[in-house]
Image 1 (cartoon, rainbow, N blue to C red):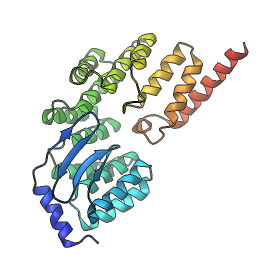
Image 2 (cartoon, rainbow, N blue to C red; image 1 turned 180 degrees about the vertical axis):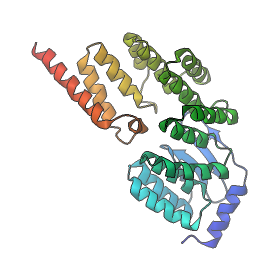
Image 3 (tube, rainbow, N blue to C red; image 1 turned 60 degrees about the vertical axis):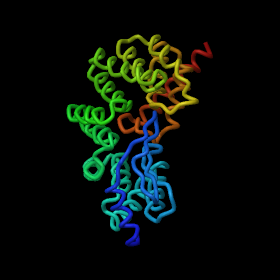
Image 4 (cartoon, rainbow, N blue to C red; image 1 turned 60 degrees about the horizontal axis):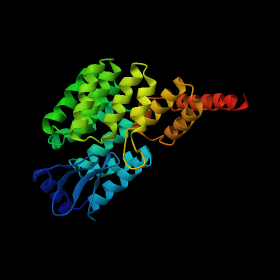
Length: 283
């Protein structure tokens, strides 16, 4: 059970000044004398050795390895003793989101949003949730709200661009990807965005040129990279490359990419590419 001093520390955290140290893939959410809350691998961790921090990290690590049931059990246990602790709510929402239990995810994420409304990432998460459930208009509003808090929020720019790609409003999509590249010319997800635009236009060579310009060994990136690389290669009858890229994509089975794409279908496409590549080799 979390001790009274720890509960007091939680309240102190919620009353302290919240700040954000933001780069491409790292966000420090808040800190007090006992711990700092930060984002890693899409979930929230805490520094320090307090019971509440360690308990949260145990649940967060379960999310990272895709033990979602285990994560939820740990985080909900924590919430019984600290119902306002931001990382418990945030991470619980993510776990339910990855389980595709969207109503439960929304409840936890909205509670987290009310506790720390200054965090642009919470609006992005809820926006993603809306996009997954067909509420693209609401998703766009939330992504734009994140941008109002932080005009350099690259993820929000990419999310808006991706919605416009799906809507085939490619010129609008280009503007948002271009805005991201102006903030960071090396930002891989913006480069992937331009590849998506060319793919939508049927310009598969151009899509590959953009994708090949990214050094994925050195950067975190949208795993859709492998999907568009594979799809473009398949369209150009480069079945060996298509097979290799589908195979790489399947290594990220816990990635958010598979919230909107069927793992079995990607596996089928990989096997089909392998068969075509083998036939070419025989010929």
